[in-house]
Length: 298
Image (tube, rainbow, N blue to C red; front, side, top):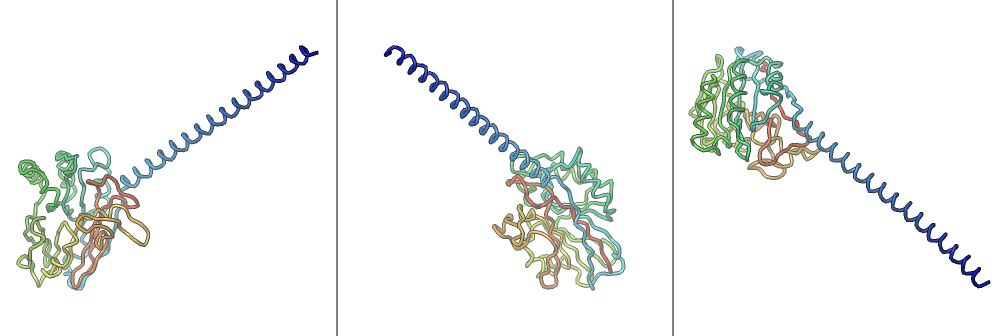
């Protein structure tokens, strides 16, 4: 009887062990499935974020302004200026063809480039900038001013770049004034001269359009009697949030006052481009790369 009892007990133990083993296998399979599911979710989230960031940094938009001012002469009625700013060696399609096509859509009379065509935060590429400039001059006359990144280049690089621009037919305005149309002056400020009074370049009896890379100097632009300023530099605040607007901008820090759009300061108007590329901060969020298109109406 004792042997029979032990045999039954051994059988029961084996059955219990098998049951435990099966339960462990089921548990292990469930854990494996859960881990696999978590990995898939992480991969999906990373993929979605990658697509989201890529789209935010490559989706070109045209911001159009119908600009009027009592001081505008009849000669500029219907005139169109396209502003390109802060390209930072970015490429939109092969040879920047997507960017060029967007510019062509605007049918501009001139293109103004308000600095930082190149980038000096680790991916300086002068040929990319010059290739775009050369293609842009095939559309219409192109006027250019320096930004801070042009002065981060070595002297040799800067000379190569500026010489290349001029060879492409780009008109560099080095703190000088030209007649754009009758009664309208176009003044381009070198980035090293933004601190200085430039009222000597202003024709008070005419309408004065000023190209100046950095928007935070608006008090100086206004005190020098600029009528309309085209500016950039702020990258739209890099990340734009509802109500808050731009999160941070060079030389303005967090919650910048001047990061995009049409600004009025005393008798001076300023249009700030959000720009096209990125620099030390490598991406933008809710802040599409922007081409500014301004049409003048008397």
